[in-house]
Length: 476
Image (cartoon, rainbow, N blue to C red):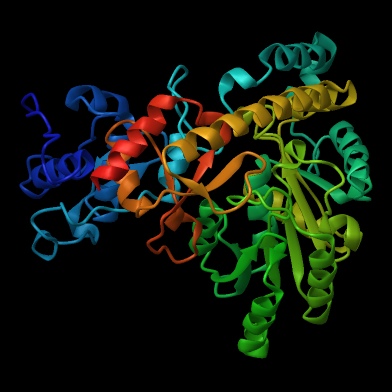
């Protein structure tokens, strides 16, 4: 292809729309043949003078139009139109009004930034310089000596996960009031896989599942991909709206009633709210009455006070499944998570784990066990919480200085912010400037326009971002 013509920042169409439209035209005119590989995100950004996030959003639009396909670890390729892509005549000539929304997968891709990339307000992870690399390096050295490395690396690990880690996790759960023996704990490739395993174990395509709304956008997308019917329950400051939950349950035919409720009870994503003790007791009574399992995702446990109510503690793991991990607090790339389950479910979830990933890496599990045993993770978490408290206070001041307000009291890692304009439109305009936002529409089971958005307190310390947001918002 010839050197690309520059994209226009004065156009009515965003840079994302212009870039996706340019590729779409080339594909429909057969200037790019089926199977042709699109430039990598970084290379495309360099060629066109835009941010990588603009390229990701543009490629997402092409995916939504059926013009390209993503191949794992290989990139994006022009799709063969004979395999069911949208015909050119059925697609408007101009993509200017066809902007695909910032999607859950856009946010997930945004997590895979090259080192040195500036922090993004919409992401859900801590900045790299907040994490303790020397601690991780020491832990790996301790468990990978010559006498141990062979046993940990040259054979599959235990199906339930490394016993050393499960023992120390049992003690850690006891600090939260959750009584689980090591035999009730199953390790996973992060909390996300734990959620996937328990969902696949208890549900089948076509089943109903109750979720919090607003809630985690990636979880909505994952459940939909499994063919499940998502029933959103409004989430308030003290927990789910139980009157709505009961109506949703009773409105279904008996054989179609939901058998699972997935919730983040402590430092809820995106509002930062935590379940009250009274609401927790009423929720457990409702679950008992309707034979409902509850999956408690405690991903942010290390950022929250230990005294906050956990359903798994109140229920003694009778109908609750407790899930957590270490990607948010310690090390995203080790992918260590776990679940504590009722005794009757242990073998079933291990079977599902074996079918999806066989086992989990013993080396990183033992390294994590070392961090827990020596109190290294606890001290690291204390330092992170101190940093986060300071960052939150600064972010709140910066947000309010540009006219934003908080729809929920600022707590934990995330803020639920009212920007005063449609944040879907705002996110498209901001991505062209290199800022990835998390618009509020993503946090609803059925996306709809909203002025709310989620911010990460740890990655919104840059006054440049807030000035850009203010200017962009005022221009919309």
